Length: 245
Ligand code: SF4
Image (cartoon, rainbow, N blue to C red):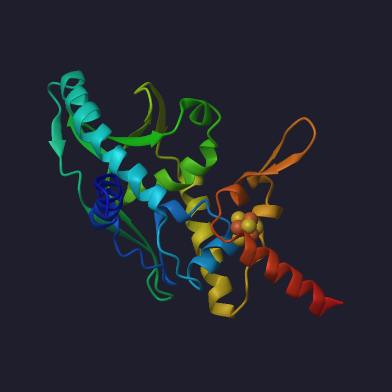
């Protein structure tokens, strides 16, 4: 094996070893990142287990480096008097104990701080470029952030987008909003209801207007563009249509 080949393969293996956690998707327990997912996408994630893509794991490694060597030391200087709270921890939010519905999250790229009487969180999201974050669908982030704010007991949340290529950045502030929190909870309770009734959820990514963006000439279904199950979804739609006919 050539030296180059050895390094190429070795780097990929190393990334897999570092980052490949057991993401087990099961009914009843949902990740905060799944709250703004299409209902059917959540269903597929529990029926077809797919290993995370290498490119996603590589992005996580670069995100770790940005977090550790750029954002962490900078935040320390920006808030010199703030006390650092434990930023690596899991949380579980019980939505319905009887029906066994939980949101379970893990604080990864977060800096949790207390300054005077305020506690706040800085969450670092590394992105390919800031253009996408400028047009970020803030609803999708609100749906993730609200349960995390309750689970991690923080009053304010700042989402910091860092460009992986040039290190430039963009920020968004969030405050806890009861209506949005309830919307996030209701989405998870609703999707769990499909499971309890033994129903396949509808292709929400193609139906719910929140997942649609109308460009000049066409409607873009942005959730579907980030979905890992487009073939499965299309095959299911075809099968359901054939049954109807
Ligand atoms: S392809 Fe679109 S509609 Fe189908 S599961 Fe994925 S996000 Fe939902």
